[in-house]
Length: 349
Image (cartoon, rainbow, N blue to C red; front, side, top):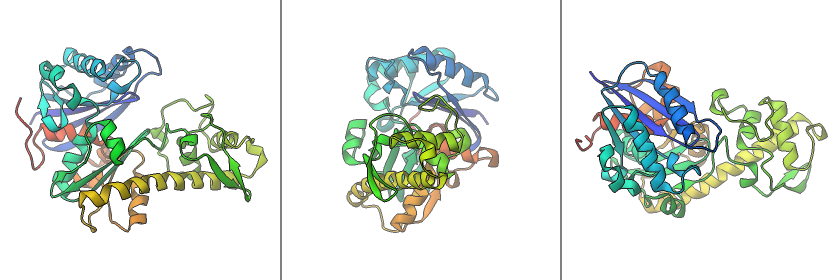
């Protein structure tokens, strides 16, 4: 059996998934250095390569890193990342979503299909393995809501612009999203309190206070460059209200965090109500949760009265790899699809 490695090249993280005989054996996430230079991708990719368990017979690549502002536009980013991989590896295919897998030599003809198509891979695999449902992949920065019907993904949009329009892409995540993007005012100590329009705190602070954020899900510096304790997270939330942490009890800051979490869930609920009716997803179909923020997908399922299905439950994975496989669904999906470990076999290259 040949090992297949799936890659999801993001602007903040590079994720890789090793698949052997249709079973996920390991998944890693490597943060990109915080530098305003495209070489950050080369550094992170080199680090990820050094940690691979064994040579692979095939590498399958998807990406969102082309959106990084180190590139002038998406075309430049897609070409740079594709060339980076092609130079370092042998036997590479690039996922072009609706166009299937293409060779690195054909990337220039499929830039529009390749750009930010990682959601498509996850949705294709999820649809083939569970039939009907709604894939809700919530990561550090964004949430993908992709309807699944009759074994296929049935999204109304394809590009980021189209998906934003249809509610299938929501720019809200559980780590990097600024709190000011969730609300402009809150109720605190019995009165309405406007919030500072500054990046004083992020949703990582919210979910550290709620205890729901996995400890290793936030490798990034905090908004104030300080620590990641509950007390320091509370201090950052307090600044959003023009206060200091000492101005209220920890229980008050925890309640405020829960309020922000509820508001973020409401945003996802609004998008879901836009996506599901026009997609014709059966009422009994599950919510399929993926990403480091899939605890929100589970909560969304409860709010909608739908069953919850974890991405790790619809694939075959070693017990030690299940958690990261669910967090890094696109990397797993492109490896599975490229190897034909699904109900559909991708186009041969």
